[in-house]
Image 1 (cartoon, rainbow, N blue to C red):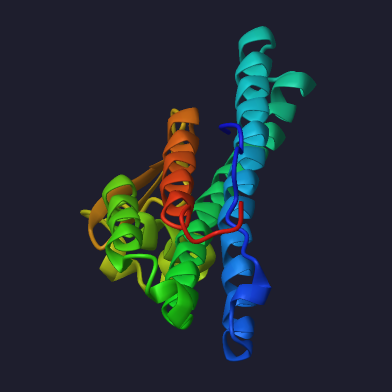
Image 2 (cartoon, rainbow, N blue to C red):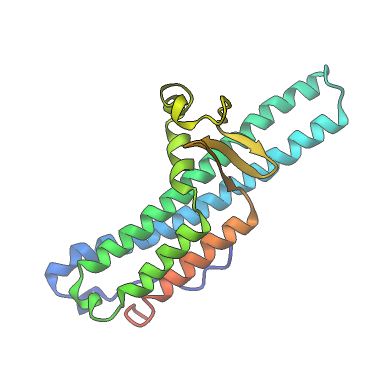
Length: 207
């Protein structure tokens, strides 16, 4: 994760009393954006560790050995870390929308911050993560995905749910393959979005 240089905070005494609750929610949402980025970074660390250990166990030990069998456990940790990372990405998005919503309820900030700056960041998120909703929904509701909505999601009779292809979490949804990369590059995208979102508040926040 990139070094955190600045996080928007506000001088509450500069705002009228009827804006304080929305201001409190705005600061909470801003912290939420950063928190989800940090959680993704933690999930990525676990993913890397489990991924490397799984590969090492399978390379160094014969298939019938106890050590090789233990690789099935580390592989499950890899899946678990990837799924948690996917939820962090979706929560990151929701936190950004919470920032947008709270800003719109604070007239003092509405006059200082163009909504276009925030909307630009949200559009970039959708460009970076086009399969976010499908990955999130099928991660949160695996039973729906595998059983109750099989006909909706399979491709020629093949249904994939939370599988790994390299460092990508892969699944089928709405008869197409969707994925999320669990990589430093994805973390970098989250960091750049967070930085750009925070910069939108630069002129209005406390120094």
